[in-house]
Image 1: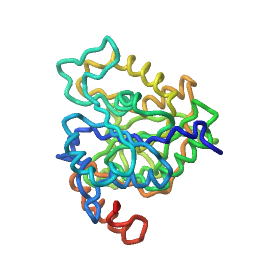
Image 2: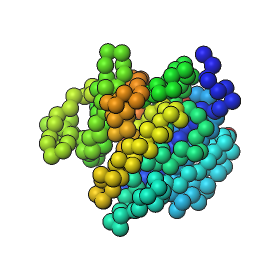
Image 3: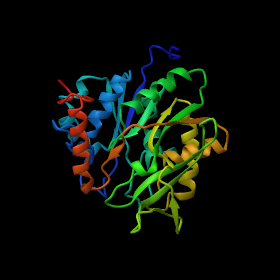
Image 4: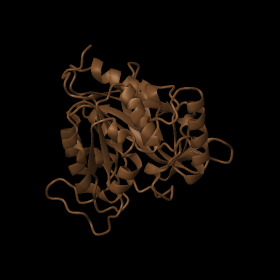
Length: 308
């Protein structure tokens, strides 16, 4: 089935404005691949293979030069792109940044900031997560097949045990879906890790909860349409009214998904993926990622170097 607007490219939105506080450095431009590639390089390569035609990079103005130096001879020559700046003071009319605020407002705020740069259907992904080519291909296929439903969205669902770090706790969106494969709820758990007995424990809202290995989680790769932006804006305004004064509060994309499902403003299809996810939350994750990328190059999944 043809996309609704054949002249409007599918857009890949990469969220790359994060501070990397647990990593200790600008992991967005850390060269981890066998020929010095970053994780973003692989994301763009996979998106191009899946038919995407535009790239939007959500960054902070202070790191733009790093991005131009790192990617200027690579994918920035291969795909039309736009930088969008996620700064603290980019807020809906009538809101000010509290004096105590230094932390970015979160992934859904980053998306809202990018709304004017996105011409149509899009996939949004984190800069520091490797999702695998199947993820981009399956989300692109979803957007093209479901094109007559303006509020039909999707996410890739990963098995929790495949997404943990041996070096500390991680934040994951824990998902429930119905028999049709549609998302029922997604709850952001901020501290998930292994205990000394090897069980997976989430410290959630003051309690320790055991989670099963096959729990489906969101790794923050979503397929949306432009119809999502008024929804995000209304929830962002509510969030700022209620929680702007909390220095560590964040406006997460899973929160938006959870609310829009509860309020029947749209549907989110969970696309289960066997794709190989990996990422760098902590510096100690680096050798594992470097090894996985070497293996993917050796097996022929990716050329090395990626960009000729």
